[in-house]
Figure (cartoon, rainbow, N blue to C red):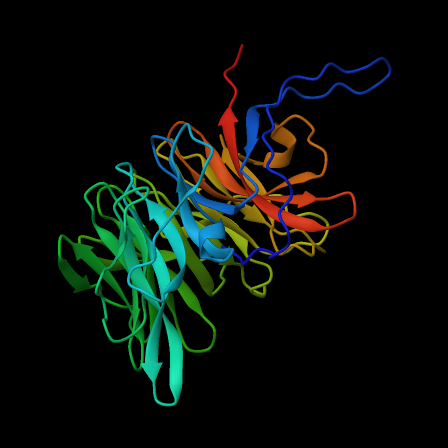
Length: 369
């Protein structure tokens, strides 16, 4: 997830969409397919959602001097519960994944002493639920590491940084095992997993090339590239083993990546709308039914947050076109979708004076009449 603006957040807002009747002489307005609920004023972004509707994100924690910290918003509630950083004098918790039991994994910044002063390193953490204290996973205890995924079997995946390479790992119970890295790569990362233990990620190669990867039963395989390109990454995988992410076709720069589905050793372009000035697009999540969400570029844009999209039945649609018109709200990057079809992400708000800020959003499907 791109870093969002640290602008003053507007007042807390909840928007319930409905069907608007078209006035005389006006064009008919398509019926909304989702009900939009914006997060409270302290939420900056939503990062994921589980089957029961618990949401993880990052917001402004008043109890810690207004710092940006991770939180969980339990299904049916409106008040974020901020995650406690493991240890003392540590900060900046960042949740990355939540399983259906409510267990959360991610990272925090640990303060460590170094010759002549101190520095922060990224450490992997797990939180067993809302309000519960988190703890360090202990991977690569003297250095940096991060946790990206947790499934219902409590299997956790991530990466660790060594002196010469970044390598992937998987944790089962209390046992941490290194996953095989891509040959020739000094930066191989595990970025997501499904309920059966299939892990996806990427491996970077010298010269700027990168390959989307998959580990099944600990065995490494490549997922493919797009149109003869040499750069791809896998960010999520569903229970059926369908992986999604982004890839750059031959002749394109990393500022022109496409949202893709990986299948049969190839990256399949999802044909996500990218506007008049194409930019980066990526698929960030996929549910059991194969519905995909993600973000595509807005050019130009000062927020650094792309538009959110949903891809289903072979077609990609901008999320903003699927809700009732909502003034000064743009539905930005979609980060998660559960099997009920609930979508979460980051909305961009524009105040009357032009100030831009961000807040988490949830989209709830409207049942067909």
